[in-house]
Image (cartoon, rainbow, N blue to C red; front, side, top):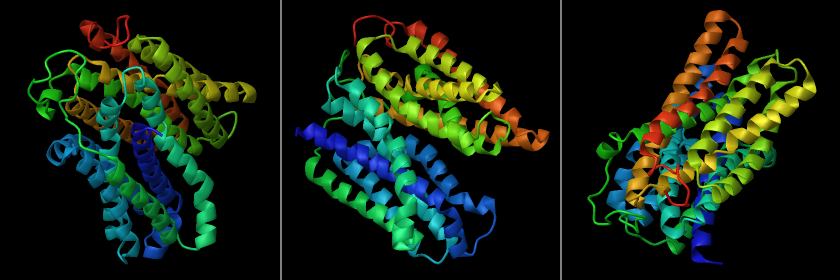
Length: 399
Protein backbone atom coordinates (compact mmCIF):
# COMPACT_ATOMS: atom_id res chain seq x y z
CA UNK A 1 0.00 0.00 0.00
CA UNK A 2 1.32 3.43 -0.91
CA UNK A 3 2.37 5.69 1.90
CA UNK A 4 -0.09 8.39 0.93
CA UNK A 5 -2.94 5.87 1.14
CA UNK A 6 -1.92 4.97 4.67
CA UNK A 7 -1.73 8.65 5.61
CA UNK A 8 -5.20 9.22 4.14
CA UNK A 9 -6.59 6.26 6.09
CA UNK A 10 -5.13 7.62 9.34
CA UNK A 11 -6.50 11.16 8.93
CA UNK A 12 -9.92 9.87 7.81
CA UNK A 13 -10.25 7.48 10.74
CA UNK A 14 -8.96 10.10 13.18
CA UNK A 15 -11.86 12.41 12.33
CA UNK A 16 -14.34 9.54 12.12
CA UNK A 17 -13.45 8.46 15.66
CA UNK A 18 -13.72 12.05 16.85
CA UNK A 19 -17.26 12.09 15.45
CA UNK A 20 -17.93 8.68 17.04
CA UNK A 21 -16.97 10.04 20.45
CA UNK A 22 -18.94 13.26 19.95
CA UNK A 23 -22.16 11.50 18.93
CA UNK A 24 -21.75 8.72 21.49
CA UNK A 25 -21.45 11.33 24.23
CA UNK A 26 -24.67 12.93 23.00
CA UNK A 27 -26.45 9.58 22.87
CA UNK A 28 -25.36 8.76 26.42
CA UNK A 29 -26.12 12.24 27.80
CA UNK A 30 -28.84 10.96 30.14
CA UNK A 31 -26.49 8.45 31.74
CA UNK A 32 -23.69 11.02 31.92
CA UNK A 33 -25.74 13.77 33.58
CA UNK A 34 -27.32 11.27 35.96
CA UNK A 35 -23.87 10.11 37.09
CA UNK A 36 -22.81 13.70 37.68
CA UNK A 37 -26.07 14.56 39.43
CA UNK A 38 -26.97 17.16 36.82
CA UNK A 39 -30.56 17.76 35.75
CA UNK A 40 -32.21 19.53 32.82
CA UNK A 41 -31.96 19.45 29.05
CA UNK A 42 -29.88 22.63 28.94
CA UNK A 43 -27.23 21.11 31.18
CA UNK A 44 -27.22 17.93 29.14
CA UNK A 45 -26.46 19.84 25.95
CA UNK A 46 -23.48 21.70 27.38
CA UNK A 47 -20.98 19.02 26.39
CA UNK A 48 -22.19 19.14 22.78
CA UNK A 49 -22.20 22.94 22.82
CA UNK A 50 -18.63 22.91 24.14
CA UNK A 51 -17.49 20.91 21.12
CA UNK A 52 -19.30 23.27 18.76
CA UNK A 53 -17.68 26.31 20.39
CA UNK A 54 -14.27 24.65 20.18
CA UNK A 55 -14.77 23.91 16.49
CA UNK A 56 -15.60 27.54 15.71
CA UNK A 57 -12.53 28.87 17.52
CA UNK A 58 -10.26 25.97 16.65
CA UNK A 59 -10.92 26.22 12.92
CA UNK A 60 -9.66 29.80 12.95
CA UNK A 61 -6.45 29.15 14.89
CA UNK A 62 -5.56 25.86 13.19
CA UNK A 63 -3.32 27.63 10.66
CA UNK A 64 -1.36 29.31 13.47
CA UNK A 65 -0.50 25.92 14.98
CA UNK A 66 0.33 24.43 11.58
CA UNK A 67 2.85 27.18 10.82
CA UNK A 68 4.55 26.97 14.22
CA UNK A 69 4.52 23.22 14.79
CA UNK A 70 4.90 22.10 11.15
CA UNK A 71 2.50 19.54 9.66
CA UNK A 72 3.63 16.37 11.43
CA UNK A 73 3.58 17.84 14.93
CA UNK A 74 0.48 19.96 14.24
CA UNK A 75 -1.65 16.95 13.26
CA UNK A 76 -0.15 14.93 16.10
CA UNK A 77 -1.09 17.72 18.52
CA UNK A 78 -4.64 17.73 17.13
CA UNK A 79 -4.86 13.95 17.56
CA UNK A 80 -3.49 14.26 21.09
CA UNK A 81 -6.23 16.74 21.98
CA UNK A 82 -8.86 14.28 20.73
CA UNK A 83 -7.36 11.57 22.93
CA UNK A 84 -6.84 13.96 25.87
CA UNK A 85 -10.55 14.68 25.89
CA UNK A 86 -10.96 11.43 27.77
CA UNK A 87 -9.58 12.86 31.04
CA UNK A 88 -12.97 14.28 32.03
CA UNK A 89 -14.57 10.85 32.38
CA UNK A 90 -12.62 10.25 35.59
CA UNK A 91 -13.60 13.56 37.09
CA UNK A 92 -16.33 13.90 39.66
CA UNK A 93 -17.18 17.34 38.32
CA UNK A 94 -19.52 17.91 35.39
CA UNK A 95 -17.85 21.24 34.47
CA UNK A 96 -14.51 19.43 34.23
CA UNK A 97 -16.11 16.82 31.99
CA UNK A 98 -17.53 19.59 29.78
CA UNK A 99 -14.07 21.18 29.64
CA UNK A 100 -12.59 17.86 28.51
CA UNK A 101 -15.09 17.77 25.64
CA UNK A 102 -14.02 21.32 24.77
CA UNK A 103 -10.42 20.08 24.53
CA UNK A 104 -11.53 17.22 22.30
CA UNK A 105 -13.47 19.67 20.15
CA UNK A 106 -10.34 21.72 19.50
CA UNK A 107 -8.61 18.56 18.31
CA UNK A 108 -11.43 17.78 15.89
CA UNK A 109 -11.45 21.37 14.63
CA UNK A 110 -7.74 21.23 13.84
CA UNK A 111 -7.98 17.85 12.13
CA UNK A 112 -10.69 18.82 9.66
CA UNK A 113 -8.76 21.95 8.66
CA UNK A 114 -5.59 19.92 8.14
CA UNK A 115 -7.36 17.66 5.65
CA UNK A 116 -6.89 20.37 3.01
CA UNK A 117 -3.10 20.86 3.11
CA UNK A 118 -2.42 17.14 3.57
CA UNK A 119 -4.56 16.16 0.58
CA UNK A 120 -3.05 18.95 -1.50
CA UNK A 121 0.49 17.79 -0.68
CA UNK A 122 0.15 14.04 -1.20
CA UNK A 123 -2.42 13.75 -3.99
CA UNK A 124 -2.47 14.96 -7.57
CA UNK A 125 -5.20 17.29 -8.89
CA UNK A 126 -6.78 14.28 -10.60
CA UNK A 127 -6.89 12.31 -7.33
CA UNK A 128 -8.16 15.10 -5.09
CA UNK A 129 -11.89 14.93 -5.93
CA UNK A 130 -11.95 11.27 -4.86
CA UNK A 131 -9.98 11.87 -1.66
CA UNK A 132 -11.93 15.02 -0.77
CA UNK A 133 -15.17 13.14 -1.34
CA UNK A 134 -14.05 10.34 0.96
CA UNK A 135 -12.99 12.81 3.64
CA UNK A 136 -16.32 14.62 3.38
CA UNK A 137 -18.09 11.55 4.79
CA UNK A 138 -15.68 11.05 7.70
CA UNK A 139 -18.15 12.62 10.15
CA UNK A 140 -21.03 10.58 8.71
CA UNK A 141 -18.91 7.46 9.13
CA UNK A 142 -18.32 8.27 12.79
CA UNK A 143 -22.01 9.08 13.19
CA UNK A 144 -22.90 5.69 11.71
CA UNK A 145 -20.39 3.90 13.94
CA UNK A 146 -21.97 5.58 16.94
CA UNK A 147 -25.50 4.59 15.90
CA UNK A 148 -24.39 1.00 15.34
CA UNK A 149 -22.11 0.40 18.30
CA UNK A 150 -22.75 2.84 21.15
CA UNK A 151 -25.68 0.85 22.51
CA UNK A 152 -23.91 -2.50 22.29
CA UNK A 153 -20.69 -1.10 23.80
CA UNK A 154 -22.66 0.40 26.68
CA UNK A 155 -24.48 -2.91 27.25
CA UNK A 156 -21.24 -4.90 27.13
CA UNK A 157 -19.10 -2.56 29.23
CA UNK A 158 -21.83 -1.36 31.59
CA UNK A 159 -20.54 2.20 31.83
CA UNK A 160 -20.60 5.29 29.65
CA UNK A 161 -17.10 6.02 30.89
CA UNK A 162 -15.82 2.76 29.45
CA UNK A 163 -17.42 3.53 26.09
CA UNK A 164 -15.61 6.89 25.85
CA UNK A 165 -12.33 5.29 26.98
CA UNK A 166 -12.55 2.58 24.31
CA UNK A 167 -13.08 5.16 21.57
CA UNK A 168 -10.22 7.31 22.91
CA UNK A 169 -7.96 4.23 22.98
CA UNK A 170 -8.64 3.65 19.28
CA UNK A 171 -7.80 7.31 18.64
CA UNK A 172 -4.53 6.81 20.54
CA UNK A 173 -3.60 3.95 18.20
CA UNK A 174 -4.15 6.28 15.24
CA UNK A 175 -1.98 8.95 16.88
CA UNK A 176 0.87 6.45 17.14
CA UNK A 177 0.30 5.39 13.53
CA UNK A 178 0.49 9.05 12.42
CA UNK A 179 3.78 9.55 14.21
CA UNK A 180 5.18 6.50 12.42
CA UNK A 181 4.03 7.15 8.85
CA UNK A 182 3.88 10.94 8.62
CA UNK A 183 6.54 13.45 7.69
CA UNK A 184 6.87 17.20 7.55
CA UNK A 185 6.31 18.96 4.25
CA UNK A 186 6.74 22.51 3.08
CA UNK A 187 3.74 24.75 3.51
CA UNK A 188 4.93 26.62 0.43
CA UNK A 189 4.22 23.44 -1.50
CA UNK A 190 4.10 23.14 -5.24
CA UNK A 191 1.73 25.79 -6.41
CA UNK A 192 -0.36 25.31 -9.51
CA UNK A 193 0.33 28.81 -10.77
CA UNK A 194 2.01 31.86 -9.39
CA UNK A 195 5.21 32.45 -7.54
CA UNK A 196 6.06 29.79 -4.92
CA UNK A 197 8.23 32.27 -3.08
CA UNK A 198 5.31 34.58 -2.32
CA UNK A 199 4.93 35.69 1.27
CA UNK A 200 3.00 33.40 3.65
CA UNK A 201 -0.77 33.75 3.49
CA UNK A 202 -2.22 34.57 6.91
CA UNK A 203 -5.64 35.04 8.45
CA UNK A 204 -5.43 38.79 7.89
CA UNK A 205 -5.03 38.07 4.18
CA UNK A 206 -7.87 35.57 4.28
CA UNK A 207 -10.46 37.95 5.69
CA UNK A 208 -9.84 40.33 2.77
CA UNK A 209 -10.79 37.71 0.16
CA UNK A 210 -14.55 37.70 -0.66
CA UNK A 211 -14.28 34.07 -1.77
CA UNK A 212 -13.28 33.00 1.75
CA UNK A 213 -16.59 34.39 3.06
CA UNK A 214 -18.86 33.41 0.23
CA UNK A 215 -18.00 29.70 0.01
CA UNK A 216 -18.71 28.98 3.71
CA UNK A 217 -21.90 31.05 3.56
CA UNK A 218 -23.02 28.82 0.69
CA UNK A 219 -22.18 25.70 2.69
CA UNK A 220 -23.80 26.98 5.89
CA UNK A 221 -27.29 26.48 4.45
CA UNK A 222 -26.50 22.86 3.65
CA UNK A 223 -24.96 22.37 7.10
CA UNK A 224 -28.00 23.92 8.80
CA UNK A 225 -30.36 21.65 6.87
CA UNK A 226 -28.23 18.58 7.69
CA UNK A 227 -28.12 19.27 11.43
CA UNK A 228 -31.79 20.33 11.56
CA UNK A 229 -32.80 16.97 10.13
CA UNK A 230 -31.48 15.30 13.28
CA UNK A 231 -31.83 18.02 15.91
CA UNK A 232 -35.05 19.81 14.90
CA UNK A 233 -37.23 17.65 12.67
CA UNK A 234 -37.86 14.91 15.29
CA UNK A 235 -39.81 17.54 17.30
CA UNK A 236 -42.19 18.22 14.40
CA UNK A 237 -45.14 15.77 14.42
CA UNK A 238 -46.92 17.01 11.28
CA UNK A 239 -44.82 15.34 8.58
CA UNK A 240 -46.39 12.62 6.45
CA UNK A 241 -44.03 10.07 8.01
CA UNK A 242 -42.07 10.14 11.31
CA UNK A 243 -39.01 12.37 11.08
CA UNK A 244 -36.64 9.61 12.21
CA UNK A 245 -37.38 7.69 9.01
CA UNK A 246 -36.81 10.78 6.90
CA UNK A 247 -33.50 11.39 8.69
CA UNK A 248 -32.29 7.83 8.15
CA UNK A 249 -33.24 7.95 4.48
CA UNK A 250 -31.51 11.29 3.95
CA UNK A 251 -28.22 10.15 5.48
CA UNK A 252 -28.33 6.93 3.42
CA UNK A 253 -29.00 8.74 0.16
CA UNK A 254 -26.36 11.27 1.17
CA UNK A 255 -23.73 8.54 0.90
CA UNK A 256 -24.90 7.91 -2.68
CA UNK A 257 -24.84 11.64 -3.33
CA UNK A 258 -21.22 11.75 -2.18
CA UNK A 259 -20.25 9.02 -4.65
CA UNK A 260 -22.07 10.88 -7.43
CA UNK A 261 -20.37 14.11 -6.32
CA UNK A 262 -16.95 12.50 -6.66
CA UNK A 263 -17.77 11.34 -10.19
CA UNK A 264 -19.20 14.75 -11.12
CA UNK A 265 -16.19 16.62 -9.69
CA UNK A 266 -13.79 14.43 -11.69
CA UNK A 267 -15.79 14.64 -14.92
CA UNK A 268 -16.95 18.26 -14.91
CA UNK A 269 -14.47 21.07 -14.11
CA UNK A 270 -17.23 23.65 -13.53
CA UNK A 271 -17.68 23.75 -9.75
CA UNK A 272 -20.07 26.64 -9.13
CA UNK A 273 -22.99 25.45 -11.31
CA UNK A 274 -22.93 22.07 -9.54
CA UNK A 275 -22.96 23.78 -6.14
CA UNK A 276 -25.71 26.24 -7.00
CA UNK A 277 -28.16 23.93 -8.73
CA UNK A 278 -27.68 21.09 -6.27
CA UNK A 279 -28.67 23.55 -3.55
CA UNK A 280 -31.71 24.64 -5.55
CA UNK A 281 -32.89 21.07 -6.13
CA UNK A 282 -32.24 20.11 -2.49
CA UNK A 283 -34.31 23.10 -1.34
CA UNK A 284 -37.19 22.07 -3.60
CA UNK A 285 -37.24 18.50 -2.33
CA UNK A 286 -37.02 19.55 1.32
CA UNK A 287 -40.06 21.74 0.69
CA UNK A 288 -41.92 18.85 -0.89
CA UNK A 289 -40.88 16.50 1.92
CA UNK A 290 -42.25 18.71 4.69
CA UNK A 291 -45.36 19.90 2.84
CA UNK A 292 -46.72 16.73 1.27
CA UNK A 293 -49.35 14.59 2.99
CA UNK A 294 -48.46 11.51 0.92
CA UNK A 295 -46.11 9.04 2.58
CA UNK A 296 -44.43 7.68 -0.53
CA UNK A 297 -43.86 11.17 -1.91
CA UNK A 298 -42.33 12.18 1.43
CA UNK A 299 -39.96 9.20 1.29
CA UNK A 300 -38.97 9.97 -2.30
CA UNK A 301 -38.43 13.65 -1.48
CA UNK A 302 -36.29 12.77 1.55
CA UNK A 303 -34.16 10.46 -0.56
CA UNK A 304 -33.59 13.09 -3.26
CA UNK A 305 -33.06 15.90 -0.73
CA UNK A 306 -30.31 13.88 0.96
CA UNK A 307 -28.77 12.97 -2.39
CA UNK A 308 -28.53 16.57 -3.57
CA UNK A 309 -27.47 17.77 -0.12
CA UNK A 310 -24.22 15.81 -0.41
CA UNK A 311 -23.74 15.95 -4.18
CA UNK A 312 -21.96 19.38 -4.20
CA UNK A 313 -19.77 18.84 -1.13
CA UNK A 314 -16.85 17.29 -3.03
CA UNK A 315 -16.85 20.26 -5.42
CA UNK A 316 -16.83 22.65 -2.45
CA UNK A 317 -13.89 20.84 -0.82
CA UNK A 318 -11.93 20.64 -4.07
CA UNK A 319 -12.53 24.16 -5.39
CA UNK A 320 -10.18 26.01 -2.96
CA UNK A 321 -7.34 23.65 -3.84
CA UNK A 322 -7.70 24.69 -7.49
CA UNK A 323 -7.13 28.40 -6.99
CA UNK A 324 -4.01 29.69 -8.76
CA UNK A 325 -0.99 30.13 -6.55
CA UNK A 326 -2.54 27.92 -3.86
CA UNK A 327 -0.18 26.39 -1.28
CA UNK A 328 -0.80 24.05 1.68
CA UNK A 329 -0.38 27.02 4.05
CA UNK A 330 -2.81 29.14 2.05
CA UNK A 331 -5.44 26.38 1.83
CA UNK A 332 -5.22 25.88 5.61
CA UNK A 333 -6.36 29.47 6.15
CA UNK A 334 -9.13 29.06 3.56
CA UNK A 335 -10.52 25.93 5.21
CA UNK A 336 -10.06 27.36 8.69
CA UNK A 337 -12.32 30.25 7.76
CA UNK A 338 -14.63 27.94 5.84
CA UNK A 339 -15.49 25.68 8.78
CA UNK A 340 -15.56 28.45 11.37
CA UNK A 341 -17.90 30.71 9.40
CA UNK A 342 -20.14 27.83 8.37
CA UNK A 343 -20.60 26.69 11.98
CA UNK A 344 -21.21 30.22 13.25
CA UNK A 345 -23.93 30.80 10.65
CA UNK A 346 -25.45 27.37 11.30
CA UNK A 347 -25.54 28.03 15.05
CA UNK A 348 -27.25 31.39 14.52
CA UNK A 349 -29.80 29.79 12.18
CA UNK A 350 -30.53 27.02 14.67
CA UNK A 351 -30.99 29.57 17.44
CA UNK A 352 -33.39 31.56 15.24
CA UNK A 353 -35.33 28.39 14.48
CA UNK A 354 -35.64 27.67 18.21
CA UNK A 355 -36.80 31.21 18.95
CA UNK A 356 -39.32 30.95 16.12
CA UNK A 357 -40.79 27.83 17.70
CA UNK A 358 -40.98 29.47 21.13
CA UNK A 359 -42.59 32.63 19.75
CA UNK A 360 -45.18 30.94 17.54
CA UNK A 361 -45.70 27.67 19.33
CA UNK A 362 -45.57 26.01 15.93
CA UNK A 363 -42.44 23.90 15.20
CA UNK A 364 -43.49 23.59 11.57
CA UNK A 365 -42.53 27.26 11.12
CA UNK A 366 -38.95 26.26 11.91
CA UNK A 367 -39.11 23.58 9.22
CA UNK A 368 -40.05 26.27 6.70
CA UNK A 369 -36.97 28.25 7.78
CA UNK A 370 -34.80 25.17 7.27
CA UNK A 371 -36.24 24.79 3.80
CA UNK A 372 -35.41 28.38 2.80
CA UNK A 373 -31.90 28.89 4.21
CA UNK A 374 -30.08 26.57 1.74
CA UNK A 375 -31.01 29.11 -0.92
CA UNK A 376 -27.87 31.02 0.09
CA UNK A 377 -25.96 28.80 -2.35
CA UNK A 378 -26.96 31.34 -5.00
CA UNK A 379 -24.40 33.68 -3.44
CA UNK A 380 -21.91 31.61 -5.38
CA UNK A 381 -22.83 33.36 -8.60
CA UNK A 382 -22.18 36.98 -7.71
CA UNK A 383 -19.28 36.18 -5.43
CA UNK A 384 -17.25 34.07 -7.79
CA UNK A 385 -18.11 34.85 -11.38
CA UNK A 386 -16.35 38.20 -11.02
CA UNK A 387 -13.20 36.09 -10.72
CA UNK A 388 -14.15 33.62 -13.46
CA UNK A 389 -10.60 32.57 -14.14
CA UNK A 390 -9.93 31.78 -10.50
CA UNK A 391 -12.80 29.81 -9.08
CA UNK A 392 -13.37 26.77 -11.23
CA UNK A 393 -15.69 28.39 -13.76
CA UNK A 394 -13.90 27.60 -16.95
CA UNK A 395 -13.07 24.42 -18.75
CA UNK A 396 -9.79 22.62 -18.43
CA UNK A 397 -9.57 21.00 -15.01
CA UNK A 398 -7.34 23.18 -12.86
CA UNK A 399 -8.76 26.66 -12.47
